[in-house]
Amino acid sequence: MERASELGFNWLFVNPVQRPGESGSLYSIADYFSFNPLLVDTASPLDAEAQLRDAIAEAGRLGLRVLADLVVNHCAVDSDLVRRHPEWFSWDANGRVAHPFAVDEGRKVVWTDLARFDHEHSRGAEGLYRYFRDVVEFLIGCGFSGFRCDAAYQVPPAFWTRLIGDTKAGHPGTLFFAETLGSSAADTRRTAAAGFDYIFNSSKWWDFASPWLMEQYHLTRQVAPSVSFPESHDTERLAEEVRGNVAAIRQRYFFAALFSAGVMIPIGFEYGFHRRLHVVNTRPIDWEATSVDLTGFVEEVNGIKSAHAVFREESITQVLPYGNPRVLLMWKASPAAGDEALLVLNTDTEHRQQFAARDLRAFVQSGAPLVDCSPGSRLDYLPCPFSYDLEPGQGLVLVAPGDSTPS
Image (cartoon, rainbow, N blue to C red; front, side, top):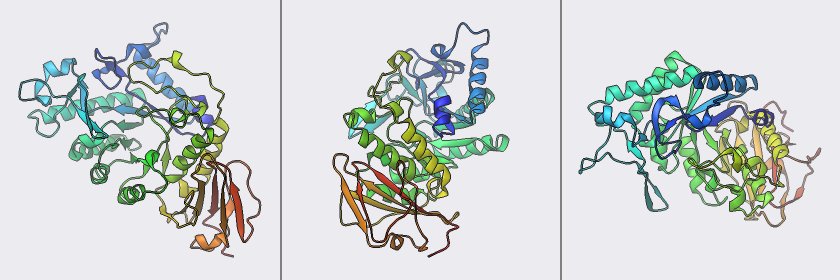
């Protein structure tokens, strides 16, 4: 928590803390009102709930709000809820409780340790809703001030509209983040419109050229702001994917942090961890000793994001044409603050690329002077014409503040 705060983050997201079923998966919750024994300090005189409240209070002292994972699409197949409230669940033609699934690259993945709730057609839908309303109140009582809603797109939007509305009526500052990865842009937009404060975008998988990311971004940005990430607990570690190429890791964080309103990394990204996180098996002993330390870079990029409103919202964004396909030129503008920004990114993580422009001011609508806010060394003066040799994966951040006087 101290390191997250020092790096400039203001939220801490934790996977489910409740007691899991026999599979041990954090997302296979057996009891929503008790805690995973692996997370409890048995030597403490405090009970589990008090320990959690103390931890969240310490996060607050460090300037961090804490986001709980809220799992309402399913529970553990061996949960007592299946026996006590069969009317809350979906059942197959053979009388067996249905399992949730997802399609990953055309392959159907079924989670047999999970039982799927039926929020839409259950004759006990009201009781199911009230149960999860109590779960949310319980977690808020523990100190959580936001929820990352797992598989939100698989739950009817009407459920979310009611839950979010009821929660915010009593706790106005509570935020809801929708996990919609794997859903279509239309489904994402429909889910976001249910009242979510944030969604997660798919910029991690962008090749810096295909049109799909900007198409999705413009479909959803006016409905809800989004959060980017270079890796997550659901993906391979980026350092493993790029075979330890530090320039590629820096490049992906630079883009994730400055593309959309929010940015997220899992613990260990800042040290270039290679071992994928696992919702059953990961333990503190899996901490890796590496020669990579990106903490200074992450802190500096987060400082840029914090200093300029254009990087903290779903701003108007456009990829501008440029003659070198290995250089990404992206324009962003904040209607509220009036800020404009140019991101110049070397998409090549192995070789230098040159960026040149006759007049940088031609890329901003206000014609205001641009200031170099890039991580690392910065130029005090931007010449006209402008030419710069970008190191592998390097990005430039050029900002025309909203209060600038046009030249």
